[in-house]
Length: 293
Ligand SMILES: NC(=O)c1ccc[n+]([C@@H]2O[C@H](COP(=O)([O-])OP(=O)(O)OC[C@H]3O[C@@H](n4cnc5c(N)ncnc54)[C@H](OP(=O)(O)O)[C@@H]3O)[C@@H](O)[C@H]2O)c1
Picture: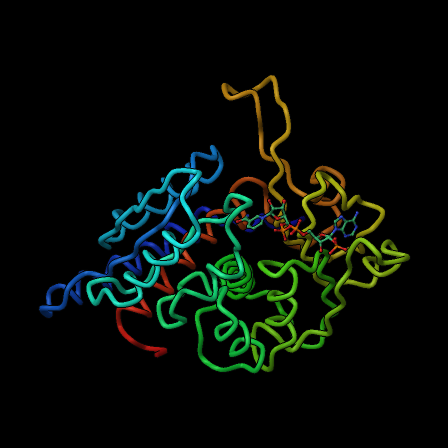
């Protein structure tokens, strides 16, 4: 019988742990951690994510600031604001919600953020330090995934781990974490992408599959060996007649086929998603405590 990895429950537990630490900090005379979130334009998805981030900050006792810009803000104006935030000593960390409008270079924006305040962990300094195993801000989704493996005590040493997807925000960093020395790591990692041949044969060798490709129900039952642990990162909005919004979130795993074969599986929603915000809170707490830089 498979076990559901309950990301929602774990994330609530971690939020309680963070809230407890914040209480102690404040009781000892320190100020509460402060996270700022910058949003450009009015993309529905981004506005929802930002609202969740702000709400989660309040839940754990952080101060949060939302900085909004219109869709047509010049790149220079956004970069000037980032520079100001880099020097704002009342701010422990900040993020710029992606994606950005086409006229703004995301890479320029990421690199403009002081890596010591880059709690999204996207700055090349943090990515580089993560790869060589130095303390850093690990980006939220990969960090949430390994936290789930840890909390469910899923063995990783010497296991075959297949990551499907090689994006900079999920596939590549999670592959790097899974091959890192120590737990949860020490896995033998294979990374698949759109050019990979014989995906099914590769997946059938896997003890752990991390599906992060954004193709609804891509991973089917015939691609999974008995007893594998499955992490479904995918969140694609698909039309639904059963929800008020007319959409539902669909993962990259065909749950009904895969679940009966595996040992552990994350649901969508309620698996990796809730962990992502919690990882951002954890990074902000680390920033406030100056534990890394
Ligand atoms: N739950 C969360 O908190 C969270 C956070 C982030 C992302 N997500 C979700 O995770 C999914 C992936 O996100 P992302 O940002 O990493 O996506 P992305 O940037 O679009 O990258 C997708 C990756 O999957 C690969 N791919 C696409 N189709 C494939 C196929 N048919 N076979 C094998 N590989 C294929 C692509 O290969 P190429 O490189 O060859 O193009 C690419 O490397 C999306 O559904 C996203 O919404 C969820």
